[in-house]
Image (tube, rainbow, N blue to C red; front, side):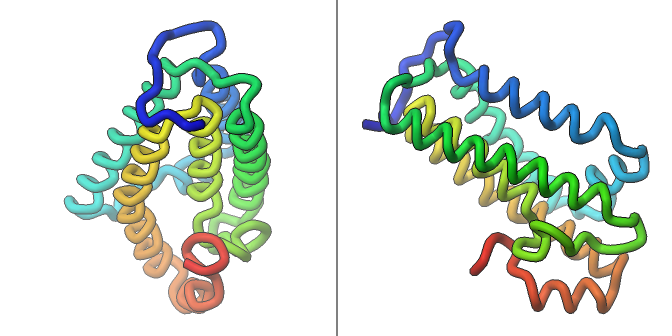
Length: 187
């Protein structure tokens, strides 16, 4: 059964193990791509003050959730561990696939292939799935609640990125907005 607040202690088998695998994948994803693709991936130059503020608040809440993950022992041998591990692995595979879709799209075109046919933000969605999986693995509701709040604030970052894509790609991106949901399938 999930706990609201976890018992915190830095042990050999805490949630940090899953974060290490995640950050290793992220490092790999951005290390072997061109500088132009990295700039495209991390460009926030069009953000206004409100969008920056909400993005920073969302990131801060996310960091708090990650600190709790690092300090929370893994709940081995439970149904939650198994369910969380499956969710985590789905997120890791999905994130890798979404990044491949992103980096193999020419810089002068919007990314609309692969997972981007079903979601305009599959990388963000897969990141959410990964962190949700870790929250379940370590058996903590507070981590999941923090993750939800973090993603609510990060929604404003996504809106700003979409505005930038409309400016950059014009009607082709507007048509894409009509066809593909912001998140998966319905929203």
